[in-house]
Image (tube, rainbow, N blue to C red; front, side):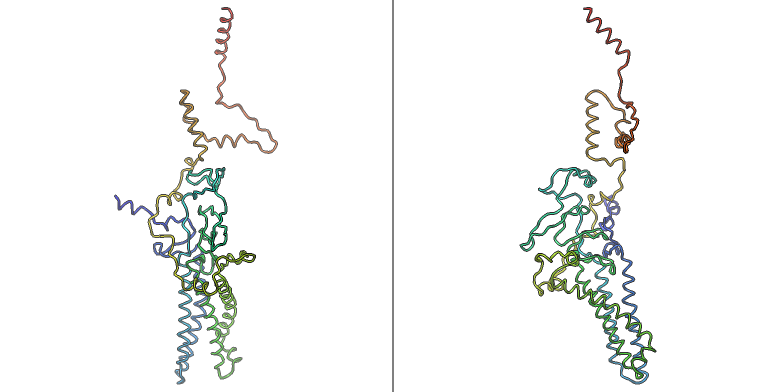
Amino acid sequence: MAEEGNQKQKRLYQTWKGSNRFFCGGRLIFGPDVSSIFLTVVMIGGPALTFCIKVFHTISVNEKDGKDSFYWYIVLFVAALLTCLDILFLFLTSSRDPGIIPRNTKPPESDEAFDMNTPSMEWINDRTPHLRLPKTKEVIVNGHSVNVKYCDTCMLYRAPRASHCSICNNCVQKFDHHCPWVGQCIGLRNYRFFYMFIFTSTVLCLYVFGFSWVHNAQNKEGVLKALQKDILSDVLIVYCFITVWFVGGLSVFHFYLICTNQTTYENFRYRYDKKENPYHKGMGRNLQEVFLSKIPPSLNNFRAFACEDENMATEATDPDDVRTSKEKIDIEMGNKLSESNGISLPEILQNLHYDELEGNSKTEGNVDLDIQPSPFIFEPDKRDEEVIARETETIHQV
């Protein structure tokens, strides 16, 4: 019986509330736009493979002519190595947990919380139907006061530098941005690989661009005639020239962010223009923090079996069972009052949906609705009035 229960129990990645996509039994985690990786691989591998074929053809021609091709063998090996490294860094960036913060199953308890009607919080398992938490809270980071925000979706106060990604629907540690080219958020645990990816792409573009010119320069007829005849080299030169401005610009920009210990999210919001950056440790220590420090372990074990509290929000709920705490209290009090008076309300009245009655009795604009008297208000019988009158006359006669 225990084995059957374990088989039916789902793992955490199967009940995950974010928009991520998991592969290999939860070992690999991607963003919802994982399909964009195939386009990125084609944009990297296509020109690189074309260049390698071009160099291999040059080596074959030189060997037929009896020329030494050792130099071009090195060019071919370096091009293939850069291409493999670039695709490897792309995969490491997009397939790992960027630093997702686990969600809470209930709002945090806080001394600053106060009781107030907040309908947006009433759906949380009826545990805190009137709890409202302050949207921001001050924490001290390296002697500086930093405001952290409360995330209504994850029901937690975000750690400093964390932010909620609207695409992946997760709070991410040291959130930098969501990159559509890698199909993943860039955060604390994959920023290093992301920078190596764009830097390797820049080096690969410059490498192909430069040796395409070198190949044309070795033509005996001259560079201009070589460009006219070798259309493939022309395409590679133009493609790499355009691409290097994009990936090269990203590499320079993110190197500046690393040296100043900023994220793209913080830089775009001009967060440290008018005040000191509390995370800046000097250029050397900032570089060491990104490239030489140990990557912290993931806060989530996606292959672990999910707890009941984590599955509670994912299970289907009967709409008739969803009631606010106020409605449940009203119904219970009504039942107790009727039982104390010896009156048992019919079941149809106990299960009556009062929201529908209230909705039908509302008026729109200045239009008056013809409200009929309620059939549940019992009027005294005329025969009872006659009996009371006769008793009153008897009392007066006495």
